[in-house]
Length: 181
Image (tube, rainbow, N blue to C red; front, top):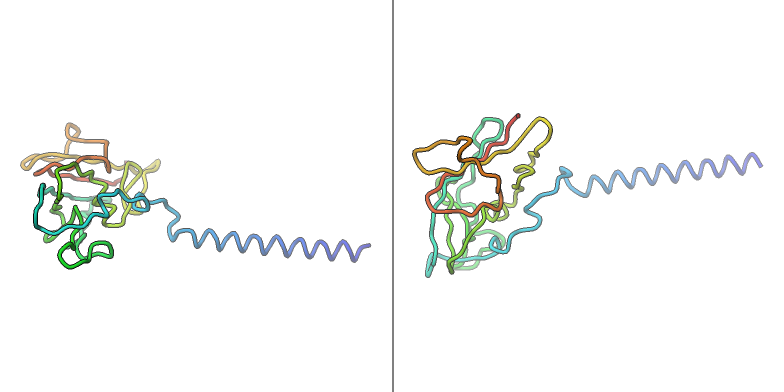
């Protein structure tokens, strides 16, 4: 009787250990950082490809991103010759950069609106009111976004809260700040 209890206790303990190890491995495989990303559900416009011909819209917006006070470099040629847009001729996404990277080119075959989130979906990084990249809003950090014209600077009067849903307009300057509150 005692040997049966010892046997079942050993089997139960072993099973619990195996279960805990498997659960730990599953969590490690789910995500390298464990964070949900808005880029996992891309906007349909982020999947459209085009060339420079027959455009109904070709606008420019300046985007600057600051993380903890340091300007984040936006890559040059982002959205050009990607895994999605790589065909001969139609090798650009609807929003892309050339040089310098902070100047966004918004191009459409048909007139229409383009939310800022499309650019981040093309980039493959997270951006919405919960944060940017792997930085998330929490008790100590927040995100703000300002939209203004050349000659102005970020202030409370030009702060917007639409983040990824903000519709891009020609000539605007957009500054995003993730910083300690």
